[in-house]
Image (cartoon, rainbow, N blue to C red; front, side, top):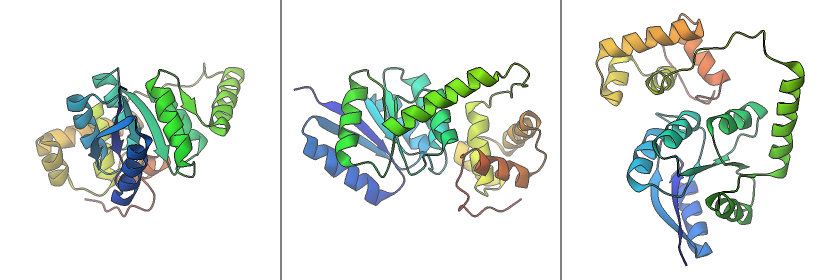
Length: 225
């Protein structure tokens, strides 16, 4: 029997260990890698090309939203199943919008997770019943409301999204530059572009935006530089 290759993207080691043990008991899964942050997940997917990535949302360096977007651009054949503590409508809608094939909350049972991975690997989306209902309700309300008069926000580039998260986590420009392998001047350029696109003009504002949109969790301690 051909095994389903899985990459685990989760920053808590005890959760990764539990997921690995659960999947190894399933018999038809092979955990090919474990990523502790979103950027590691993107890099590992490029190399390993797993069938399914089990993706947390709140991770350091690069969050699950942006990691999923980059993964699906780099490896269209890989599917992403979100496994998160967050079930807010905005989180669910954003992950569906970037192309996630499924969404489960961590309160779901291991049996549900196993079934979801198998379904997604077979090409079938898998959202828990309550989440699927909310997605459909949100789509219906959006159609009824119509957003023709809304001014679309310019999308952030992958690099801008990385800079936003690191800045919001409190990293000064020098540290951001070192982590991303770019110059401080380039970091400053990206920060300015972020502020222009978001119409936000200070670090505290960027941090509030990152928290409000789920880029980082509000429990993260941040500083200004």
